[in-house]
Image 1 (spheres, helix red, strand yellow):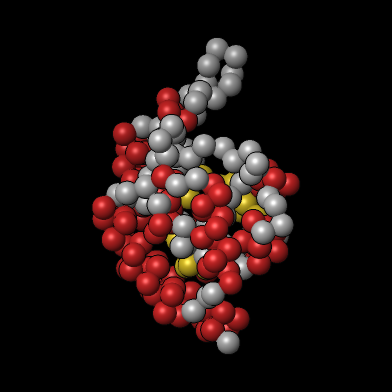
Image 2 (tube, rainbow, N blue to C red):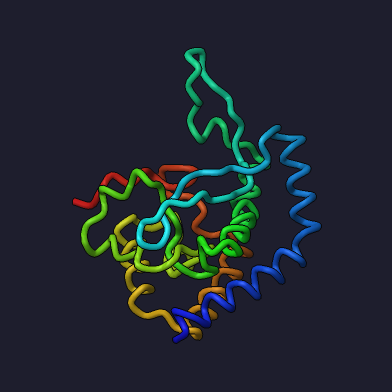
Length: 201
């Protein structure tokens, strides 16, 4: 009952409240991004959602579009500015995903939506992460985020899918707030975000 009806209702109510309360902050951040990074303010990208249906995710832009002499984008490390790092470390860059929650693409809690190109790389167990809507935060995010391996992330994702409860979601939300305040797990040991997933051995 909770995972099929009540969870969606709670998503709608909380996301509407969040957008209303955070609208001044969203306007300020959007203005600063326009000044510091230029257009566009939002980063939009295709991601797989529930049942691997593709949707367009919204985030605040955190990188410049700096290119090399051949017209290729520079590495993330070189394009990510101090302001962009701040947005990521505080998870402010994720706030536009509230739009995706309102549209029904995402939920407040669920496995994070990853890149479309990863779809062929999942094994049968890992693919179960797409049995539910992706989330703004999830069990993997409160248990290491980008500081843990891909395999461990997927273990947490599947564990969440198999045991979705109201109490469990509440715990994840409160733990997320603590993690954001502590700014833990933002980067992996060898990347400013997370290494690319190349499949599990």
